[in-house]
Length: 206
Image (cartoon, rainbow, N blue to C red; front, side, top):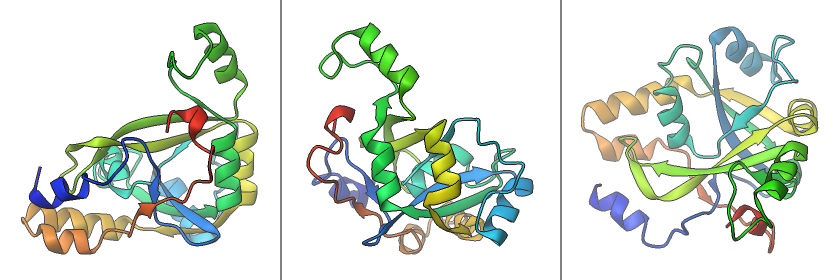
């Protein structure tokens, strides 16, 4: 881990949401094939081929998305989208989410957790955040899975804009490969701690 990344971890909670956000919106990332991603960015909404009956995962962390999609090089993930969504919708999903795994301190028992997971329209994973070289950091990043009602609300109500950020991903990756880490970091989105209201994340272990 670089000195820059070591300094960055000293004041970050183990589980917290860091995201590019405004007073009314928050940006999450997804990656799709060009057949889905390019029309979505062009039209500002997902095309008819995008399936609303499947779970979809959104990620507020740009670098975790880069880790997941291989800087937009993995098959079926060549188009990286920055999806700006309504904060009220995002927080509705968090309030109605269940952790994707059982935790003794948060759930009455494993059976209660399984019942909650089956009925929840959203689920949360806390996965290790990544540095500029996509190595794991000692704190975790939110992954938010949407299904059922949450998927439909996401696609039809919450989205305010969709931007194709694949060229930015490729440029940052090229700079990293060349060892120009400061220049690469300068192009990253400004992800700040999300101002979660008291109790918003308590049931999710944060």
